[in-house]
Length: 203
Image (cartoon, rainbow, N blue to C red; front, side, top):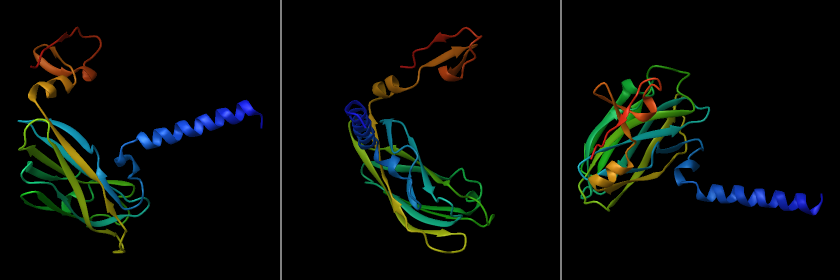
């Protein structure tokens, strides 16, 4: 192999390595048994809420049951509500118990012997910040157990996340531009191109 080709391959390898290093930690959650947040870092206004969806990567295993806690500092945030995830086989067996700084969640699959596999949605936890703008609220998933549908245990690890509290003005600036059409506000990405629209200030 000549020198120019060798240098090009070396640069490509270094670039790929740099990209992997710069990727957020949640992107590493691709091993069987990994439990992680769909959006691990979210900005939320002081008077707003943020919903964190908890996912499980099960690979080729059929998810039978899961038990986990999402924990955080109760001085910094509070739980508004906990809902079942979007995976239909687990939703009927969803149970959640909340206390200050903790949401304990159990999901039981009593509907299918063959699904779900791959990535399963376990719960959607909505939080409200109690801390002022500029505060970062760390979140942690503590896995208690993950079972296959045949009751075999799956080694699992939980990933972390965070809620970043911002001022209402900062939240407005980071929000997708909203447009008005016939008196109804719709996201810019959803508006039909054939309809004339006009920008609207939300703040």
